[in-house]
Image (cartoon, rainbow, N blue to C red):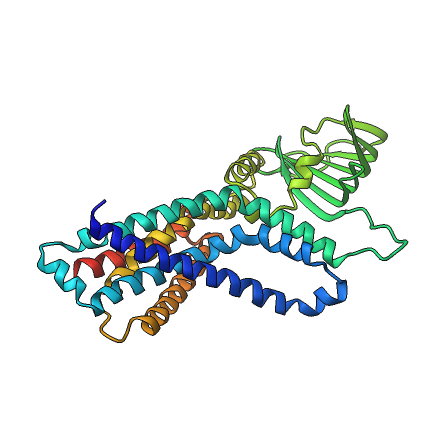
Length: 366
């Protein structure tokens, strides 16, 4: 590594680390004061709070890392420009890429770290934090036992073109109540409907109680007399784990889990739901690239910043650029989930626009 590259890298890394530590601290302080009344009311211990925020660190890192990259880029090159070091570098024959390649590589490295943290740690951290928050919100009083967790109004797209609707699911005892199962053909026409009062899972599978089965023809009319059974072993490949996973939002699934879920949904013919979830999946791949793109976006602005405009201007421009990007990204995601844009285009549109604009600004630098 050249002396110049080490010099720029040291500056970028120090400012990035400083910004990251400040933002992490501010996030925790603001969050604690926001829930201070509830924390005191529930008598939440220091150990629980420390554990809660340590687990939440990956989530905060993923959210603030791009902003830290932008601030580091703007401040570093604005300072170099203020001290006329950029002019000296250009006079020695270095082009824009020679000067900025270190910070571009740094942005790429941060993007890869964000991708890894976002897939490996963030889903697990969100699940653990939900559990800790639930424990803090529902601390049992003395002499009282905490009620066993139940999930209500559960819906699920399963294998073999089945749609499940469950009024109440108790994972601790593997029991469902108020069950409706709709079986469909490839054209999403309902071929069978199973209604059951209760379902219990055992080593043999799902046993349903007080079931009524309806068979439908291609026109949606009941073909035969409905069949009633007091107890019936229903061949359903999904176990309690699959039903339990349905309460998870895409944010708390890893990429492999989300891919697996999409595969199951595609087998059920749930085309609209699959398209919306594909936007979430593609966003998991494209969102980490923001750190690299925002570095490229910050380079032309930092080169144009003049003397006495280093600190405050860096912060101001960072806020404006971040705000514009997040507005554009939210709009494209909304258009994707509204099926106006293709899923991949919706997840990458804001990145394409920001990347194109940044490259245009870089190539037009004097």
